[in-house]
Amino acid sequence: MIRYMIKNNFKLMGRSWLNAFMLILCPLIVSAVLISAFSALMAKYEKAENFSCGYSFEEGSPWKNGEAMLKETGLSAGIRFLPFSGDEPEETIRENDLGGFVTFGSSGYTVYRTEDQKVEGMTLEYFLSEFVDQAMDAATGNASSEETVKLSVEHPEFVPAVDSRDYYGMVYVLYFAWCAFAGAAALLSNEKKYGIGKRFQVSNLSDTQIYLGKLLPISLVVIVDIGIAILLSTASFGVHWGNPLIVVGLLLVMIPAAVALSLMVHSITDNVIGTIVVIFALVWIWGFFGGSFETYMFADHPKIIKLLSPIYHCNRSMVELASMGRSDYYLSAILYCGGLAVGCSLLAIAIMKMKRRGRA
Amino acid sequence: METILKLTDLTKKYGNKVVVDNLNIEIQKGEIFGLLGPNGAGKSTTMNMICNIVRPTLGSVEFFGKDFRKNRKELSKKLGYIPQDLAIHGRLKAWENVELFTSLYGIKGKELKERIDESLEYVGLLDRKNEYAKNFSGGMKRRLNIACAIGHHPDLLIFDEPTVGIDPQSRNFILERIKKSNQNGATVIYTSHYMEEVEAICTRIAIMDNGKIIATGTSEELKKLVVEDPSTITLEEVFLTLTGKKLRDI
Ligand SMILES: Nc1ncnc2c1ncn2[C@@H]1O[C@H](COP(=O)(O)OP(=O)(O)OP(=O)(O)O)[C@@H](O)[C@H]1O
Ligand SMILES: [Mg+2]
Image 1 (cartoon, rainbow over the protein chains, first blue to last red):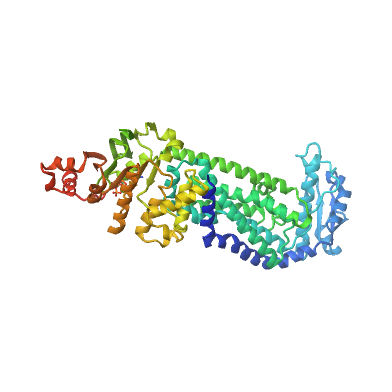
Image 2 (image 1 turned 135 degrees about the vertical axis):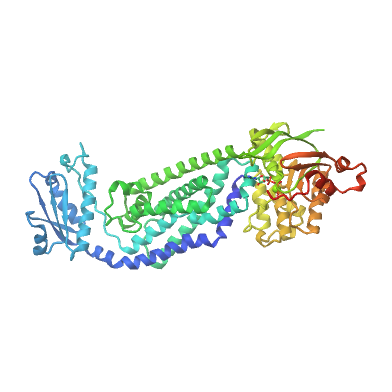
């Protein structure tokens, strides 16, 4: 029964230039700009793969148990770890031409880096945070206290570097996909302007049908738009997206989540501008902590805040899958987005029902 | 005679303002019931309460003997509502508009195609079916607005001022169509403030002012309320006598 509603809403959105502009052109333009702006930095990051770092352990540091693993994992990531006494880290770096230095204390570690070797220093920092995260995850027993951690993990994998083209090429298409509401704005504002809602109310559609009659066509249009943006980004900048099935799999869950979230906010505000403000602010915050602006490798936001952002899961899974073929974040991205899609949809329908009861 | 619609003590308040005040109306099958009233009398609010778009503060709407709100699924198919403000998508073609709104009643496939052509034919827009609604003239948009509400063959048609802002030709055309629907068995509620229209097509007329029905009857009966010989007065004079000559811009 809602087949024709889906079809005509699809047509209505397809006939609005705003939606092609926001969802195809914008991500391409922004990623083009950022790819070139950051290519120097990211190229160095890539080059920084082979360098040496110093390390030392304080008396009784539990990290001493993981020394062999540190060296081995470091080598696989292109970082050679050399033992020193930890007295003068800065001087040691300079005298031995090291990329950085790390001292492991009784509960944490400290990274030293120099301005000349900035990229190496950041790479070291990123490597260590990854290494420690994965070691902690794998550690059995009381994992909440670093002092008692037994570093028993075998071979934690370090994420290899991606270049700025792949990173920003992917991340910005994903970012704009979260702004999916832009594509629906014209449709929903016209519905309100022309009082189309009255016709839905007097018809015998249920609120769930009215909701799905919007969610499905909007998601479909956004998926098509973003698909085109991906093809164009591959064709024009040579962005490596990795396995197309994996990308499509994520989009099929992520975009309905973005649309459901927007429709839920819209069902509360009943106002297109208000919804745009709320959604764009939320997506900006999620993007900020999720690596849409500063790459998530270099950003030192607390991990828990990163994990709260669905954009972090999506970005990270796509970047990792494209660069190394596997990611621990794909499943969490799918689950997070799926949960968001279902939760927001149920809430939106409940709000519509409530409003109808109040009004009619 | 079968009662199709029964309004009992129907009341709507916005804040302290009583917009519709204790309405009691029964509409019989086959009637063309005219609701006349100055601007702000509460005509649209009444129609919206009948159609379940606005919730009454008090009172009930019985449609075919059942509470509309509790039997929406079943009863909505019997109702065709033509809103006062155009409710069509400018970026859809004429036939697409009719398709979208007719499909909301579960009509599909070949039948839907036939109903689209039939509805467009009904309002004289069949040869313009492939044009975008936004390029239509005011009168054509009005007609399309009607076409979008009749494809499911409703038993009760509610026209809320279907002829505002259009030329006499379009108006005549619409009035002829309403009469034809009525001959085909539809019951019609028609609101307007054009006296001649109402007099020409309605079998019974109610005059509404300040949310209240102040008189009901055929146009003859209404005229007799004011003078003894109905031929000496127009409905407009009756209307002005009953509702007063003050401007209505509430
Ligand atoms: N949502 C609302 N909130 C407050 N007042 C309202 C609302 N809707 C309508 N009104 C008021 O109710 C009164 C009746 O409005 P309504 O639209 O029913 O009149 P009408 O008879 O259809 O007039 P018109 O001939 O101009 O269409 C008006 O005074 C209007 O200002
Ligand atoms: Mg009105």
